[in-house]
Image 1 (tube, rainbow over the protein chains, first blue to last red):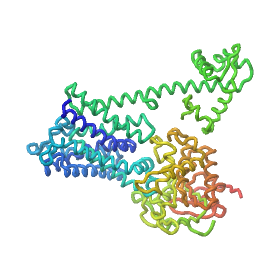
Image 2 (cartoon, each protein chain N blue to C red; image 1 turned 45 degrees about the vertical axis):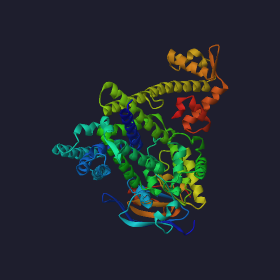
Image 3 (cartoon, rainbow over the protein chains, first blue to last red; image 1 turned 60 degrees about the vertical axis):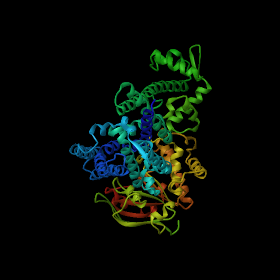
Image 4 (tube, rainbow over the protein chains, first blue to last red; image 1 turned 135 degrees about the vertical axis):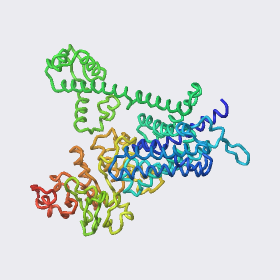
Length: 386
Length: 245
């Protein structure tokens, strides 16, 4: 691995981390589309900044572009507040216009500007190592690395300092306001960080991948965890994983790095969507099947509890009176025996004392939905997990 | 109850897009009452609470909490928003949501520590939710979620509690549990203000009531003013509610 290859992967990874952090909160605030809007509408800001500074990595350009990003958010909210259109329509109105202005500006000044629309959409990660930062003639690494590194440091500092405030205002804006944590300040703070991150990442990975890096890792993490800190951590891991594996995928295919990273992000989400332990499609289907069986089990146990007569408790009765088919009846019987809830003597089924207590507790729980004693049963039965 | 005024609202007018939803409200809430705010849908009940708490900006009028502006008295006030106002799929636990009640006294940047954790566990215990502390909040029933919200207000240890429909969508057991806690709060001298929908239970649960329908219709002790006359004025149709003495 050459040093240029290493630098590209390092830049891509830092970009992924810097995107995953605000991305997690955007996903939780149901504002994923706003990152799409920001990533496109900062273009005129970048172009104007480039006219002035002639340097894509200049802090002034980043600031100008980030301001365009925040202006986008303000415009979207303003249009939305009129009550004439919904939020998604407002987003769809604002960003294409701003983006087009940027595209026209590039086209009109094509001779003077070292920017082209391809680079804007997909970035030029492969060329990032060529633009070096020289301090008193000493090469200290690629400029992009410094830019995204500094942005990442700021993001992490803000995250650590204001984690509690971000969490509260994301979960419950009303309480945040009443406790004196202005949701507006936190909202625009997050929007500013998202804008700055987008601009910093833009040069390396382009407008489309920035969105993917903000949303896909967080959305994948959301399916896997019920803990905000873990969600942040997993988003970062997924982002970095896709960045590095995407690089090698592109290397192997001899294709666009940005495109490969985005493809892997999509595949990663698909895999998690299918196989996630709790919210994944396969897990959901399995759970539904189990729940059906467990409801049957409970129906059966309740029947036994309600009927002392031997005739009602005969094995064959299952098929005739409860009206279950053979397979279902067998599954339920096996499950009940496995859990020591029934005994079968001479084809007559009886509840054990464990089965008896379980039935009472379970019915009680289902009716009142509160019984601390049932807590440990949640590990065994899907039925009680809500 | 004494003669101290906990909350004073003067000439409060609130508008959404220049359409007034609360018009010239004057209201005094005495210290130590358990008060219901009743009125039809769209009467501005939630809006009134949110304006008192500075979540909405009124276009006219003022609010004071024990004689000072809300901003100066935040620590005296706890708020339970409507259960439906938050996303219960948010990745967090019951314990963590209740802990949010301590954020106000912590202020910006500072994190909860042992003291806050202890207060949180006590509040969970009070509402009978201690066994569920590590449960993800989407895995709780509607009644349990409401108890968590109540615990989050209790942990603030405030003087005045504002609650927006705490009985909405909860089972009877939870409703009784909640009202008992509210009555206990009153017993120790706290002021509790509840947006309430079920007119039948007003005389049983509350000792003070405010009738609201964009304008204030009446406010005072339940035994004096909770009558057909005020109900008719508020709801616009003839109401007959029998009041048990």
